[in-house]
Image (cartoon, rainbow, N blue to C red; front, side, top):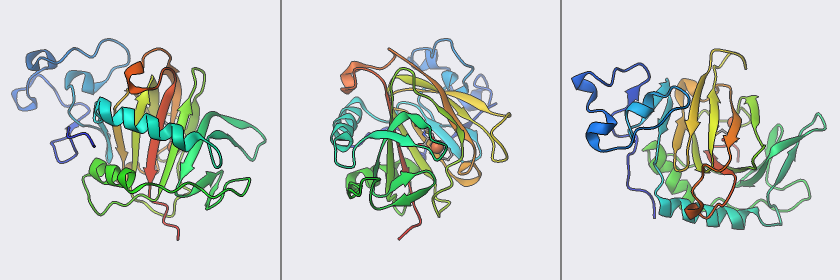
Length: 250
Ligand code: MD3
Ligand code: FE
């Protein structure tokens, strides 16, 4: 059921590589791929579907999920979103609520820890084996076995401030899958939430793997781009992001 497209076994281009040198291969137009269009400066606009390492260990693979995969994931997210232990706005210790809505599989995340039950005591839904297998394929390592998935839904105004994901007791990579509206994703540094950062447009079907030195980098979503998603995914509005993680918990 999974995409048979590019995986990380393929050569990875790096930001700054010159696409016009013979070693870097042909430009998208030469390969019959459409130009990426305007917007933020993106190395991958020159490279089409190839993975791009935007920082050490942070690899963006556009169009990794087939439309079929995206449809299946959207349908699954609808089931996971239903109560009990369904999708909700996470409450912050400050008293605020996140604009994003989230449902967790495997382990339930509340700032800033994981548990096996939700706030109302409902058992967390299991993380299905097929989803863990998708994560293993995404990192190109059959020994990668994620036991947590966070499914985030962004309506037209939702965003996510710069943060680190460090409630996991493991340095294994995080896998991110995007479906629906595009967003402006901001990938920062491991020291603090301020510059330097790199802005990357994430589109429906894109894969991002954050491992190695990038695993504990600050990151966020500054905005989505309402109306940019393809309703054929089954998502008529908004953006879904699924992250797979290794909790390191037992
Ligand atoms: C880099 N989600 O759930 S995905 C999150 O699009 C989260 O919903 C965003 O940040 C979203 O925590 C961004 C990209 C992402 C996810 C996890 C990371 C980047 C990451 C963990 C470590 C480093
Ligand atoms: Fe995060």
